[in-house]
Length: 253
Image (tube, rainbow, N blue to C red):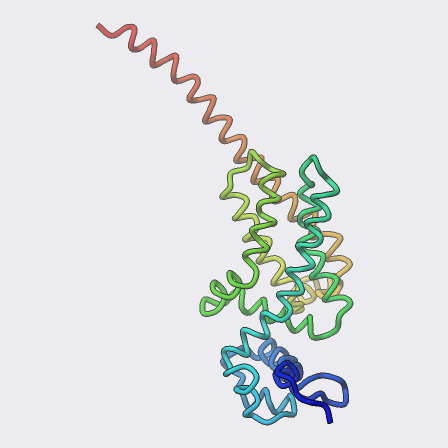
């Protein structure tokens, strides 16, 4: 008989499909939270969908809130690793010059496209859940900060190196707008399907990829061109003001 280790106890027994009890609970919770929201889903709903005893949520996670965080963290770690890998590669490839805005945005967005297109309904449910969390005053600030901000700061640093004359506030606002566009797009709500009367489909990720990167890059670039021009005008105004001040002092009795 196989001796149970601490690791196998944490994972739980595996079903005939090869998924552990813990994985089945995470998958069921992800689907239900994405479809109904955190507060509308009970622990009993989750365990019924997972086909496990209700006590196992406390056993594996410690409660509903901890389960919710584990659902969020599980795929965040995968996305973060892939984004950082892509960013490191493009920075190395572009050196000694900084990478282009387009390549940085592509490295940030492409993992979402890949996962949503290739890796099954679990990822689509996860992106719907991110859309909920990102727009929630209860969870958004805390969870998005905890699980995504370290990687986001790495991308903002890369954008700053590419656009050194840009007002830093414009970089942060541009990222903020990008985050909103991503959460709406990858939630695949069908909004654009209805708005365009079927001309565009929210599930058409090839069209998303074709348009998203140039659209977002143009927005970053436009704001940064504006802020750089404003700084040049300010410097020019200060330069012109100094001789005028000296002339005024010379005329003073």
